[in-house]
Amino acid sequence: QVRLQESGGGLVQLGGALSLSCAASGLTFNEHAMAWFRQSPGKEREFVAGISWSGVTTMYADSVKGRATIRRNNNNQTAYLRIPILKPGDLGDYYCGAAETGWQAETLNEYIYWGQGTQVTVAS
Image (cartoon, rainbow, N blue to C red; front, side):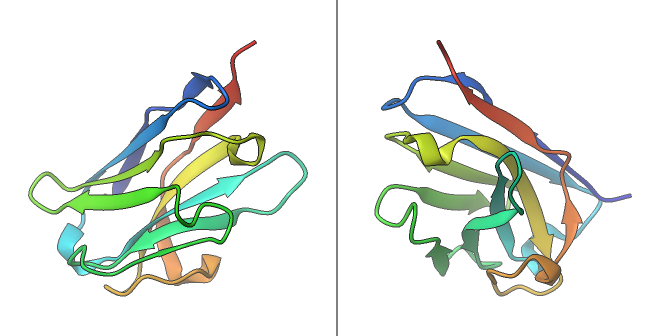
């Protein structure tokens, strides 16, 4: 059974850093591109960042380009996302997805496995 487990969300400070992890099991991790998507209240799930099976190729949404970093470790079957300076638009529920192929894509339907998500909200 495939399982993707996100961690690292919770209360964050705007201007602070966000670091998320996605631990995968039950699949041949290095055969799948991985990505992070974000869903805000009342909005559709949107692409944030993706990484190819090897980790060599990455792509980012315009909203995080130049700020975020996606990476992966195929030895421990984990994908990561880091956003060092959080903006209000970064808040929401973050989902980790595994693509059907090894090449990253921005479209939702390219991803066949999903985690349950981790919520990122601003600390008051």
